[in-house]
Image 1 (cartoon, rainbow, N blue to C red):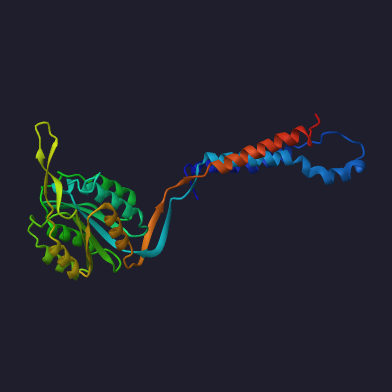
Image 2 (tube, rainbow, N blue to C red):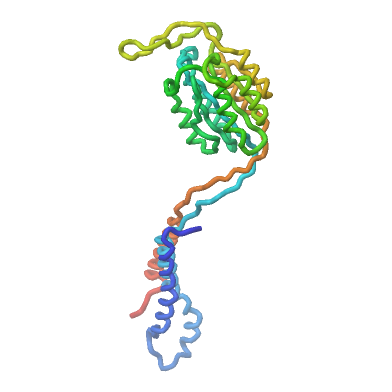
Length: 326
């Protein structure tokens, strides 16, 4: 326990001084020529007369502690549990706006399932990479899931040069994972297209990922056949769609996954994407140690209530059982 204003605890030293002064100033309530008649009663009942003063001391002491601002925490907890290091690589190219996952587009469904996947983890370290014609790290691997979820929800089409740089996305994810603690390092890549941008060959990037112990799970997002894809904007800025064939380089996605010992999945609807994340959720885990910081909890309420309780009891006793005689 710590205190926000510890210097106020020095006031507690006044309580023993108050008792010392009170003892020196104590005078008998009445004078007797012979105390033998009341001595037995005085010895048996004397402590009762001290109860109100004792309760008053408890009241003052409790309130001084409350004003000093007692705090529980912040605490540092070391937790050893099962966990893995994961990087989610999400395609944010314009084709992810295709509306073949009605009533949502591909990107919205990918974000929804990614958030659900994060919420299902507890001790895993997770990072986020967004890619289109280039790739950038949105969140380094972390256990701050609130920040990660918000970053996933903030993914937007148009923030990066358009295109699909799968090799660059694998390379960026590998770079984030190569020094991650633990033996299990996993990259989950969601895309709906073919590799057409970037200077890094996807298969070469996969070989490098394997050397760093990164296992790659690739997910092809999109229905079979055709889908409504955005092809530009109209005069007033609205998106214009055209039904076009769905082109996903499944052979490439299978190859890069197999090179690293991972798997390739095809998500043709929301339910399929949910099941894929559930399968990935059952990955092998290894022990990790997580340091968690807990925020300070204000604990002034307990001493404050103790003070009120002691004051109420003193007033009740003074009005009933213990009555002072002038």
